[in-house]
Length: 119
Image 1 (cartoon, rainbow, N blue to C red):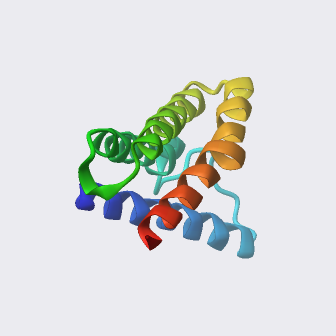
Image 2 (image 1 turned 120 degrees about the horizontal axis):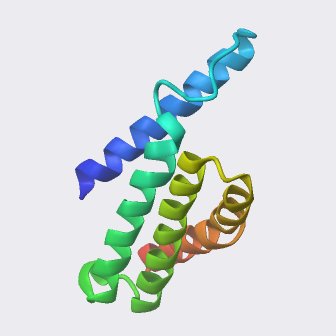
């Protein structure tokens, strides 16, 4: 599980660094990132990782609240759906799932996780 989390984080960071370098260098790049095609790591692996963490929390493992587990499963499922919407090129679903992930589910999951880990 740790390996997937670290891999996802590194691939996501690489995606961001590639995009930043392209923007700063005024370099035209294709729509598909060579470092993270269609958000595979940023959305797909992140979603799978979050689902597994949520599932483990729902089982009472890791000392995380069970409610946080349900939120993790919902947020992870949303990220996987966002990846699929990106893969299929559905702008409407990208906006819906992306909005939920970035404005509601993602922040709620990380704030609650931080609060739970501080205790």
